[in-house]
Image (cartoon, rainbow over all chains, first blue to last red; front, side, top):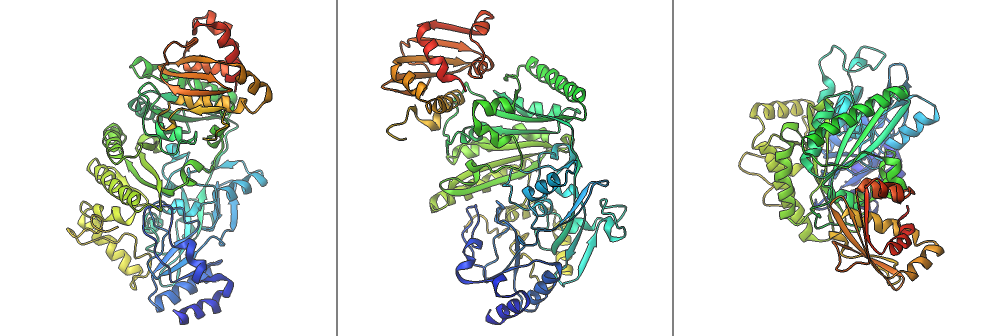
Length: 486
Length: 121
């Protein structure tokens, strides 16, 4: 390790090569995963540096993990034991915003708050969708891990928002993927084979993306955010299905009752009053004119009226500004990106989830099963959901907040997450940002030819097997790691 | 919970949304001297029903304890939709919704009128 440290120091300077106590923040994340010790952390600032770092890692057979803010809740940003972490938080330039073609070319360290501030500062009339992750997290990471944001109901999950990319391959070469492989405008994939797909959802196993065209959307002149309290979760799902198929909302998000109470500083709500709302819908409406917004609002009221006619009980929509007047804590939902302290800054410090994409047609069924699993394990059913891409699919996430310092709690979370994932797979819901333990049980049902093709692509691109070996590590069928070990 | 807390939620993990919301409003109100004086003078229980949610606010010794459900023999009771009660919290008058039948009251109306300013957001 001393020799390789010297090589990194020669390349980057001592201040950008971390060891000893400086590695502590890299050992763990929010989740129930046991800490893992990196061998060394390097801070890269340029594509050329990453090319050189990867070459050294290959020569020294160092397993590599890439990290920006370390806030992934699938333990993906945790290092392989003894491995190399490439910290990209200082590689945070916004190279270009193409206003006419609506994209920004950004580096992996660019955060949501940074790009938002940049657009505001330069009075660029474009917007983006924000996830519920903290404002200081990476846009590129969310795209590559196919996360979602508050425009995903309209435009799909974030891998669909990539308009082109550049990536350092494991052998150090730089690949251009997307229309930018042949065009000076990064306008999307173009009529080319989808090589951007070699990096989306591959969890860093195929290379390191150093530039990405992130697609932006026109900012509407008029916007309104509403909350609707639904007394029955199935009513909320019915509203999601119906609204996602009509040109009414930019976004429909749903939060179950425990998340609403966490906002009032109840860390672990244990019981729902049967008389209180079970689900909170938040709805974003917009229009380029006041009249357009008003028409959408009328359509919304009409549709909610239809649902009430079908017997679903709900309160009338409330403007977010009204809720903020009632309690300023609702301000957490009035402007994105936002830091939801009740999830990420809890006393126990632990946050984990089973996040799945799946069919809206089975939301009710998976909610029934998932609710019961969480309650069985002693956790409130904290659920976040949203229809995606016009209702072609949706997201159901089961969140747990826990005490990381308590081994028993961590064990409980592991057992619960496994059970939730298994139940989801049974119903056709697939985990996204798939953690290693979920890959284990996914292996049992994932098409063997699909697995073989994945292995072959990976072996072709990364013959040394250094890139994120802890990710997408298919186990031998019947020899799952997930059940027995932490 | 601090000993000098003016608002006490009885068993927060099981409290309903109505109780949490009203508790947070009164807590903010209690930051003003006028509201603290008002709290000091209040005694007895008020039951609030919004939609199907029911809570009790029991005033004594300058503090209010908010509990789920209705206590026995409250001094007053106010019932309405969530929306109409929130309308009052947002500064709307009570007479209009009362005349329209969106809000109903029972018991000691004077006590209710003394509590209402504390429920204003």
